[in-house]
Length: 303
Image (cartoon, rainbow, N blue to C red; front, side, top):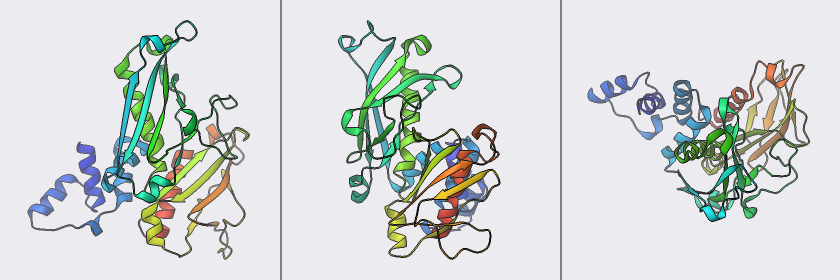
């Protein structure tokens, strides 16, 4: 709770929670216009070193909550004769989403390779058929497998199954359920952010140095933008190369500054690790993603 309190203080532009309390005791007042959600997320990320969980926590500021239920299948439905795992039914419900956000069926990428020893793959998630996300760009388990990892919410809900590897996790329900709830929260929260959404992922056909980037605006950002054109700075780094989709670059560019332009509330392009492998890149994808979100928020006037 102390991390949240410190992050809330940062959101109001105050260095420490104790300083915020002292200011309130001295009669200073704060209003919603004084609060920066970006500052809140940045500070909570610094304290927890977990940007995705900080984004998930920030949803509460907009009265959005994630409800995740996990139930082990009955013994009669387990297939221990064929598989060395334990199966569970998983249900996700997002409460508090605006009507427009519920009906757009946001797409997210199912977490993979988690829950095992040393961060390895001990837990696998799979969508029920109707929750598979279609489209030209697909991802799958193990890169080129048949099982799709892109999923979508339908009217704020997702359903699927979880499989826990008996050889690594045994039958520890509490541990497995805790792991999958945290992993799903990290995966879904960025897709339902009411302001700026950013997804960086590697489709099946891409090389290990290439990724796909998709930015989109949530309902709060779209309402603020209205019909205006949103232009933002693309991060510049010697080991990173952006190739925007046609129509997504701003034509009037100052020298050496690459600027993106949102079209119908979204921006898309490819991202490459330039001259080095992804593992050797000095600007990791998670850090690059945070910069992109910051730059879009700056363009929206929400820095």
